[in-house]
Image (cartoon, rainbow, N blue to C red; front, top):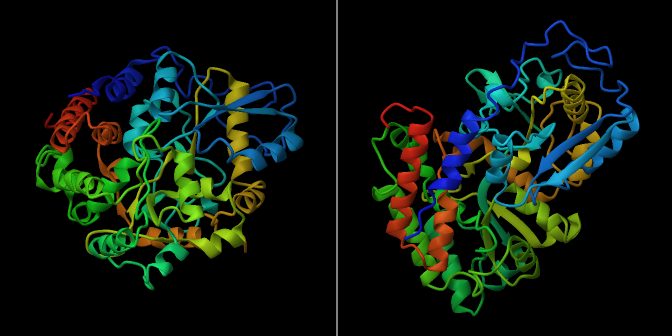
Length: 443
């Protein structure tokens, strides 16, 4: 059995020890940077940044997101903004580099408490509590995420992700399925109907990093999460090896063995998934918002509205699982360079200020701000995702105190190197060690 301790534990434990010499956020209080802005203040959006280069770290599925903002910001300020793609697994790559002392000015980052802890936010990140754009958020979204120990460290830029089912409308229609499934069992019934007719019900991928595997387990846990599952896991009262989570892992494996997934599951990639769903080579994919960005790179809005739909899913109904992911938010790093730190704040202020309307238009994304309407051309599937957010239930990433490498262990299961029982055992052991690393009670 493979053990996956080092990657996850290095992310939290090493990051927590790294950069001990970083300056206190108030250390430069009263000083001014070269542009005349007091350290820690928020510069005007159009302040000159001639000669300043800012770096944004992004993942494979988020590196195109800033394009419209960068163009506008560079023209307005004279700054140079570079995007560096960190290879998958993104979170581990970022944590390793930060632990070694290498930090960008901004980075896409999952804005949950556990992942902010993983970056040792109080040491490495700029607080954003007084950001000028906070009041612009729509009610209910301002404080939904991005906060650790009563301090805001992450700025939400797009609708938080919801785990649910993207589907090809024509494939379901051709199979005689005229209504979207209303719960988990109905979804499986539809899948078996499609399989019996020679189609591929579900598409997932195992290469090079199987990060989407975990959604299959977590949507099955939505009802349990609403009933306090992650509180019990956080306290040590319940484990991954107990019936609820173990059962979800085993069910996912059973569906694979039943032949409900694509034949190339072990070698297929994220790019393959989007292409297959759009082409109708598969009927459904359990995914999050960032998957739709892949679809948007392949088709225009009219084609997407014609072909692709979305419905949330849980054991008992159409309830989504809320999971703000790294493509939804940005963090600003302490770099010990007052000009760059101010520049990072200025870029955030522009992104969620004067640049925001152009940003959501370019992304064709639902707006987070009350005074900025969503673009008329937002694809129907993205609107459905946004509409499901209010009733969604927190995911492991949103509600657990730490996040073990469930997806990597599930990837081992896909490749046949771990059994479902070993996946649960390995993940529980990781969870306990990560919890110990942050000093969680009960571990």
